[in-house]
Image (tube, rainbow, N blue to C red; front, side):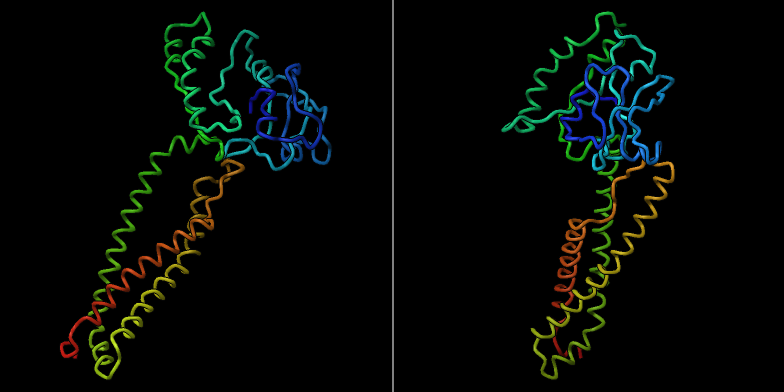
Length: 298
């Protein structure tokens, strides 16, 4: 990651050894604790010189475990200032390095909506003040056409999320349609099953069973069926997710891939949905079974 010196304070990172770089450091970098263990083993790594694209830089600090950067799909090994990045690229001091992501903290009592409105209002003047004077017209038009987006950093940056956001919403909509079709088929099968049980229900009613008790018996039967289906779906979901994650990410994927296993919220929502579908189909099926005439069923 290439950051400004105030980055560590803003994101709340702390150093397990050494210190973070400041404005006066020209050839200093900070590395993660995991990278230090891979690179230097039991040694501290402080004061060691590493090369970034043939540019030497000294390790002056180690970021403590618990902070993996702001990229939700991966982790960092090295954090360097813009000066080191410019030297590694072979550019001179006058060459600007532009970052597409700016991180800040909201002032107390300020909502993200108010911050968004203020930044959008200031954006044209910021662009006018920061565009270099000697630029080809095509580059100037491209930079002038850039727009600002203000969003919460609670879930971190994600290139994959930005790239596939619309696709995943379409996939979610298709999954909802598939679920609706499945529920309709399930309701049809349940109603067909209730028709085959009309004779049994009629016998129970004929020998003195109340419609209320028979109704509840059939309803509990539908709820138990939904419960068994839910219990069988959980391990199946975990297995499919693990196989899909290994297939999509592979051995060369990001070192810190976000967890995709169903959490408590997903499990609770699925349980409520399952119980709702079981109740709906069970009520309709039970009502159709006990609502008919006993003589017709016999």
